[in-house]
Each structure stands twice: as C-alpha cells, then as structure tokens.
Image (cartoon, rainbow, N blue to C red):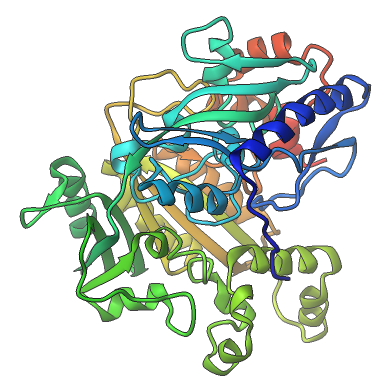
Length: 461
C-alpha cells in the first residue's frame, strides 16, 4: 500500500501540462454525459458518485515554479500538499495554510475547504490564491482572477467541489519558514477557560512575550483541554520524531514544551490520522512495531475505510455478535468563538466522541466568498470530531448527524461538505450561496456536464 513517487522537474511538469490541458478539453467536450475526475486519492467521507465518464488527470500534478522573493508559487491542481510542501521547503517557504493530511490536493483544498493552525492569521487555503486556470463544465479553460472577466467564477469556486469546473493550475502566496517549530502545550480544566484564552492568543498573537505563528487545540474531555501554540525558530535543543513508535497526540498530555522540524510539524497529524489510527490497531505497541513505517499515513487508513465501506466485513461481524448499529460521525464545523464553549458542551451531551480537534480561523480579507460566507470580523473555531457512535434505541442511522447540522446552524456556524450531509434542498441553498451559485453555474456549465453542488454533496448518487 506504499505510494511510489517520482518527482518531475519544473520543465517536465510544464511541458506535460500544456499537452494534457488540450487532451482534457477534448475529453470533456466529447462527452455528452456527466463527468467526474478519475483521482487516485480522495479525502472525502461521503460516497463518491459512480456514474458518468471519468477524466484522467494524472498529468496535472507537480510544481511549476516557486519564487521565494515574490512570495508566490505556481502549482498544478492535482498536486498533493506532500508534493507541494516538499518543493517549497527547499526554497525556505511554505503555503500560507497547509491542511493536515499529505494526500489532500491543492485543487481539492480550494474547491473544497482546508484548514490548519495558521488559519487564525492566514484564513483558509483559497484566500491565498491569486489566480486559477480552470477547466469549466462547458469545456473552456479560463484564467480566473479576483478582478478580471471571470471574477464571478473566482469568488464562487471555493466550496464548489468540482461542480463549476476543475482547477488545473493555481498561483498561490507562500511565506518564509524557520527550520523548526517550538511548541507549548497549555492545559485547561474547562472549555470556557480554554476558549477565552484561545480568543486572547489569536488577537495578541503572543504568549508570555513569545510570538505565535501556529495555534490549534485538543480536547480530551470536557475538563481536559489543551491549546498548542507554535513559533518558527532556526535553532532547537532537540527535535522530536512522531513518524514511528511515538505518537504525537499523546505527547500533548506528556510535554509542556516540544520541538519539531518544520516538515515534521506540518505532518504531525498525518502519521496517525490525528488519533483515528487506533481503530486499526496501529497504536498497539506490538502491532505498530510490525506495521511497515511507510504505511503509517492517512491515505493508507482511508483505503482501509474504503474497503470496509465496500465489503462491510466489520458490519457483518457486528451483526453476528449482536453488537449495536454504529453511526459514523465524521465532521468538521465552524462556529463563532463566542458560541464555541456552548457547542463543545453540546458535543459532550449528544455525540460523546473524544478527543476533539479545535482550530481557530479568521477570514483573512473582506472578500465575498460566495459559497462559504463567514463574517470577516469574527473569529471562528473549527471542531473536528470523528468516529463511530452507537445508534440509540428508537433512532435510525443518520439521526445524530441531522441533529449536528441543526445545532451548527443554531450556533451561527458552517459545516464542511466533505462528509455526509442531510440538508433539505431549500436549507442547503440558503446556507451555501444558492443564488450566486446558480448564476455562475449557468454561465460556466450550461449543459450540466458537472453535477450541481446539492446533487454531489447531499443526494449522493
């Protein structure tokens, strides 16, 4: 299950891109039926549609250019962040926001959403995009910028999940890095204390006089929460390694201070898929020793989940042993910081999945991101909670997910659409920019070769 990688030169990438772009246009324009990308990896946790023609996008992976002096990079849309970061770090820079998992693609993080511990100062990945070369549903390739004739597509593209077109090339901003990240894990005994300090840190951007470049948090229980703050540094007394026997999330409870090389920090969550690798026994000391190190990564675990979804071996065993039905809860949501403690209290009462990941974010600009509108003056807290919860007596699978959606809305929040959604059509379009979406959809996909956002994210064809 190891992933073979061949790094191409920027010249090879550019030559391949030019040829592949024309080929992809031909594939799309020659198909009267709906189409979708034939991607090797996916970080979606909702069923992917099986119908329609698949577009081969293997050629759209690679970095065209990194200009550290101007703070920009040109990258192809199917490039994974693992590839992108590997290249940018050689130039002493990184993308402004690097999502946690190695096989998330930059096109996926923009057409969907991404977040990480720089989001409190840099917003979301799509906010650092300067221009996008997009293959539209009509088969055209257009360059969309915030101030040109395709600005409507530019502003509507984030959170469109490939229903308006596919990003073939993106120009993004990058920022300088240090060699290491110095970490502090700050402990709290209540959600209120933790969230109050989180808000203060995000405003002041320092702790005890030390500059803060990264902030996220981990709640192990309602009365055991930690904020982890990080600062770039060029020197460190040591550097920890959480790619083998040691497990990063456990270190949060064990250390007050820690140091990681910058690349190891960016991928600190990938080795154990946050804490979800425990479901496969990968955190058992003996099994971890036997488990090939190259398989300790999120895409391997995701393939195991896909196999279970396809063949249902565990579900069959559970039925034979008369175990309760389990509803899979895989959610990332955002609520304003002043509602965050109340939402965490709701999670304890109705969901009960621990740990919970916390990540603050603030929209970087006042730009009108049409399909995922946030208040640019507000600080939000992302909550990530993932796992299986027994279905209660008298309920059916999906009931708890529906209550989560209702509670997020009641707390003035937003929910990411990478996972299962149950919204009604009218509510969905009210939340996710329906009027603006359909104006752009009619212009760039008039023949509906690409499924619309509600069909793709809710109807689950």
